[in-house]
Amino acid sequence: MLVHSLGAADLAAAYAIEHGVDDDRRPLLVLAALFHDIGKPDTTRRKDGHIISYGHAERGAQVIRSMGRRLRLPQPLAIAAAAITETHMAPASVQGEPSARAVRRLRARLETAGTSLGDWAVVVRCDGEARGGAARPDASVPWLRVARTLDR
Image (cartoon, rainbow, N blue to C red; front, side, top):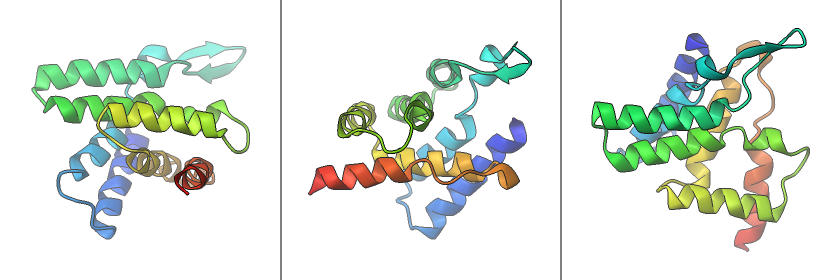
């Protein structure tokens, strides 16, 4: 898990540099990518011969908010990183393309926390790419495609 999380953070940092992401957004992308799976140690169990981590995203958001207070991170940074972490598994909740309603809800939730669907998509993409040979297609793409139709 540590290698995967470090890989996701490296990919987020590289993305930020390559795409000229504003200096004030870079820490959010890297922090959220680094800690997106931080809830897994508390939620990982064996079930029917499989290893599962149900609820790890929600638990991870709790850990980030708590850690942010203890480390005296800027509160907006901790809140935004927690929101991205809490929702990074949204693509797993739908098969195929998400509904417009689901995209609107996700976007609103992220914006309320001071981040965006674009920031979320970077972390989701980096999470997938950090799986190396087990990488899957970018799970954020269908969500961004539906969001574009909403913006027309």
